Image (cartoon, rainbow, N blue to C red):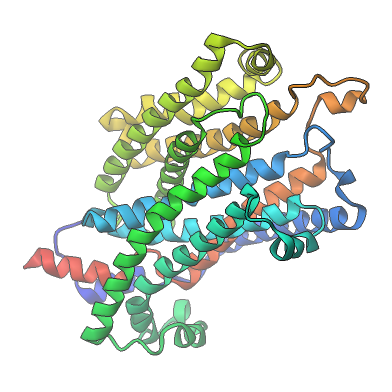
Length: 436
């Protein structure tokens, strides 16, 4: 951050929400169209049943569960950037904390929705709550996701209270129409010392709590696979494998959001090249860690090459899914490492490109975790239709999956329109402390 040439008035003017321009309206319109198409496809699925998908007896999990695992993974960024950095008293991350919190909340919301989509009939979620058995890993997932969502929402809301007080005092096109919402969210906040102390204690407690919960949500999600007896999933490595991958894609998502918000809202004074440089080092470290777990995940079964694992591994390495597999490995890990390991690669534009590669590679990696394994059960397929031997999502599945991704970005877009994406109050305090 630039060294104290910025007054509180200037910081506030720079960081209050701005009305959408032409580009913002076009972006929002495109996302709404994609969401509408996804909703239409979902109505078709509810009306006609899961027969409109290409999921069958063997591939009973498809692109929906791939999306679910992706959303759960990217939501981990809230605990990484917010909780870990807050507890470590890392002040340079202040401009990034709310971006991370917004991504985490929007991702976990759509992770929950995509599970209901995968169930076929939405009322089955109600039956899960009424008749669910605690012995089932699916119930563990429901419990831990709900807990994580509540904590993430509080971690977004509580640090926002001082900024809401600032927004209530502002006038302008960007904030006038949301004054009722701001009053509803934080009119009780007066900025008293006792309120500040209680708020800080609550945020610290939430930061301490969300770290084990975040580890639990990704471990439990991995157990949904590891406790299902299938080639490629019968692994004790899955918990750490999922957590390391979640840290990577979450950090990559923050890098992409940093660049977009910095460019669109002209935040070069607040999200500086220093932030990209340090986030680049973190992403390289996380990519190397995830690469290690990938080697561990495939090397051991490949060395033993049990008959049940052989077909699955060969299909990934040299068969039908090989192009996607190597695309995910190179795009999601190797090329970003090669870009960001050098200082020039940790500039904003190269970081943006590398961040997109990490996120795209991560989505395809989740697809590969789900689908190829289901096509290779321990008992070979006999006397089944030819379509059971292959899986490619129907247009309804693609529409719903893309619509859910667009929905998550739409939530982030609305957050950025209504709330400051960089904490105003914390930025002013840090500027003042640095000046002293």
